Figure 1: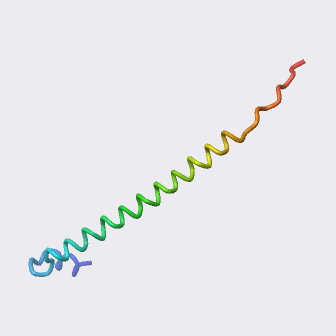
Figure 2: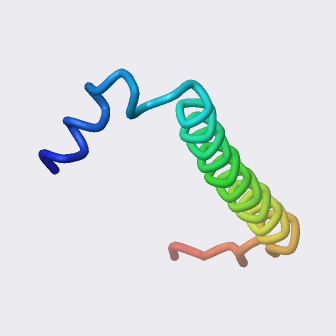
Figure 3: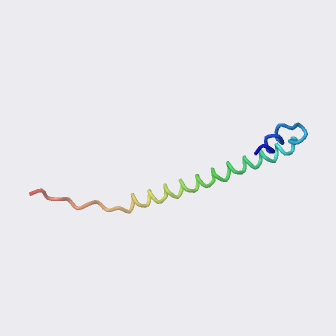
Length: 64
């Protein structure tokens, strides 16, 4: 961990291209996680809508 901190602090050790690669990897991870969440919520909403529309009404209960 100490060598990573030294690498990041060293001006010659962390170039602009490396910063760009790390940034793109981070953006890619965010996009993948966003896609997973979006697909999951879409599936959940579809399942919930199917359950709601396929339910039948309950039979009335007589309280006599």
